[in-house]
Length: 165
Ligand code: FES
Image (cartoon, rainbow, N blue to C red):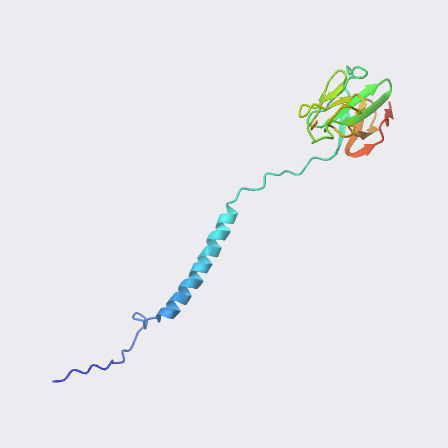
């Protein structure tokens, strides 16, 4: 009796598919890996924190000057880098953003002091002591009736520009 060593053809069924060549298997594995990398990358991007930047509030805002505001005393509306003065029947507003590096200056009896590098400004915003290179900008003010004023932080006006009450 002799044994035939030649390979015999085997009929494959759906339950017993033909063996996949190694090259095809590696090609499929590469595609599946790429698809999985894209999927997990997308899922990871979805889990990133949402942007914490909020739209900035409008540069224009309304302010009501308190009746108790003394002449020459700065009124600083909450949350705004602006100082509003009422002197006699004139009202004007200055930015309180230091012209050196942008710190918020503090109002004092004589004007403004910058807490960052020591600049000093007069009540009219002019520089008394550096390193600030220029004075505090004056801002546009419009009378909105009574003690109400409309201030535009985005619009500077010439020093000395005020509105009559
Ligand atoms: S930021 Fe005001 S002095 Fe530097």
